[in-house]
Amino acid sequence: MTVTVSGPDFVALQVRDVEAAAVFYEKHLGLRRAPASPPGAVVFATEPVPFAVREPLPGVDLDTVDRPGLGVALWFRTTDAQALHDRLHAAGTTIVKAPENGPFGRMFTFVGPEGYAITAHEG
Image 1 (cartoon, rainbow, N blue to C red):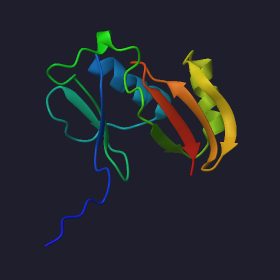
Image 2 (image 1 turned 60 degrees about the horizontal axis):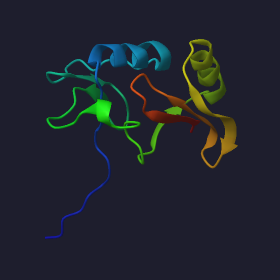
Image 3 (image 1 turned 180 degrees about the horizontal axis):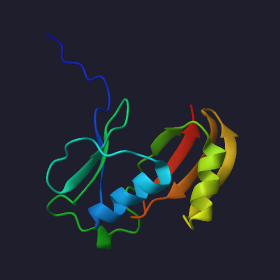
Image 4 (image 1 turned 180 degrees about the vertical axis):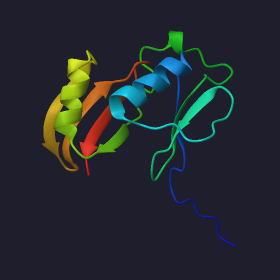
């Protein structure tokens, strides 16, 4: 029997302050919390892949890294990248790449509350 992998099935960001990070994603991106989350985490009801913020794993010290997630590309799909950009910019969120048309539609990159770079794109 051959073992296969179908792709990512769950994405979680390790954060210093789980509740503050969860509130950011609720307030600014409109994500909704899933009905249940494990201790130390908030899981959002995102499709097709669940997304969460969680306490750091043992041995992870987020204060010793220049930027969490460096080298990882995390993209969120949105119905209107420009409107989301404008809302985040107005709220004081750091924008690291201005909106532009890319291979997956209109896109831009912002920095979340814990320093992760996140790209939003229309799709």
